[in-house]
Length: 149
Image (cartoon, rainbow, N blue to C red; front, top):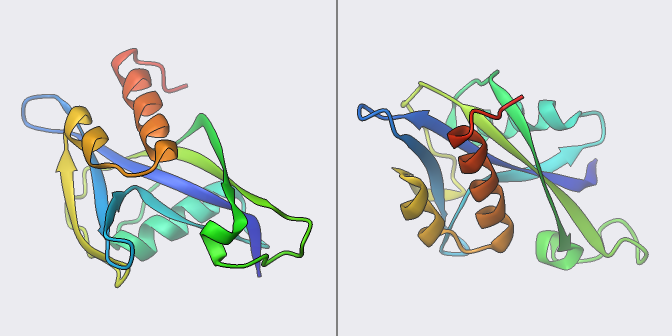
């Protein structure tokens, strides 16, 4: 069973010009660009959820995972469409992560129509949700400052 928690994950890499690029996905149903996201199952840690969601949505196995400080609250009805955990659970917390990968062989899940690797500015402009923009900003700043501890 799913917990009232989810993860938001940005894949990143360095391109041939030694610049950071971020992979974002075009979600079919909502017709928006976003990072990888998904719910935490009852028996999972956040890191286990990151690994599972990245594998499910891209076909890529990852290990180089960095938890960001960015945590957002999303109305439960925006995530599941109803009060899934009872009338007293109003929000789902979204924990953000950056994941380095050199694997460019993305295999899209049925949730997405396409994916693209973008520079920070390009990705930021395409993203729909503030939580995605904030997490991307934090990841980009940490990478520029060599501050992934």
